[in-house]
Length: 106
Image (tube, rainbow, N blue to C red):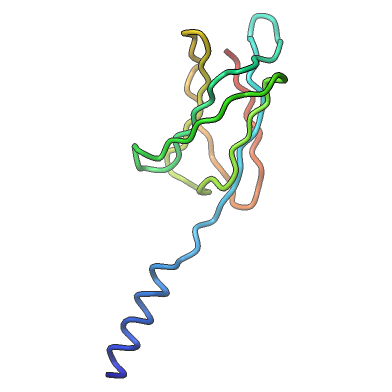
């Protein structure tokens, strides 16, 4: 019985392994004018899982923010869209515990 307890305890510790997090922020702007883009949709694809996308909408100042993003993901990409226009996909490396600034031209 003691052996089963130790096995279950080890499995529980393994399952609760802490995933380090970081955040990404920046401004979406018109590359021709340099002006911020309000109401642009910003998409973040983090990690190897094709279903791990998050989206947010920029404020009137073009600012966006993603918090609690898995740090040190192998494939992390971000892009912005508005009115049929889409930015290039930007590869990002997220450092644990840090805020990463990525400005996105549209």
